[in-house]
Length: 93
Image (cartoon, rainbow, N blue to C red):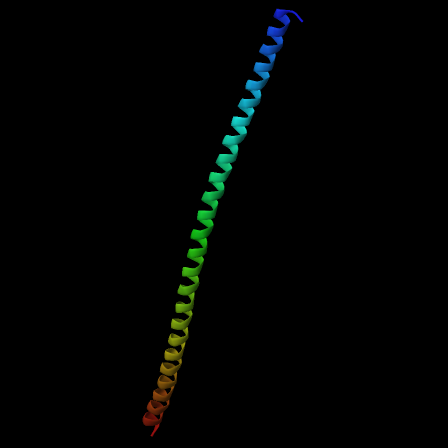
């Protein structure tokens, strides 16, 4: 092989090596980006789970309050019905 031929082969090899390094760097950047996205997604999932737990607790409180209000409503309704019956009886007799 001539000196010119060896230089061309070396130059070609350097070009291929640089192209391979560029692809490797690009793949590494993409992997880092995905890892960052995954970490962000994990943080968002954790935040959503915390929100879910908070909303579940709020729902439990709201259900207890609704049950208490339903009981108060039932008591008030019975008292009003009783008062209406007494008033009708007083008006008739």
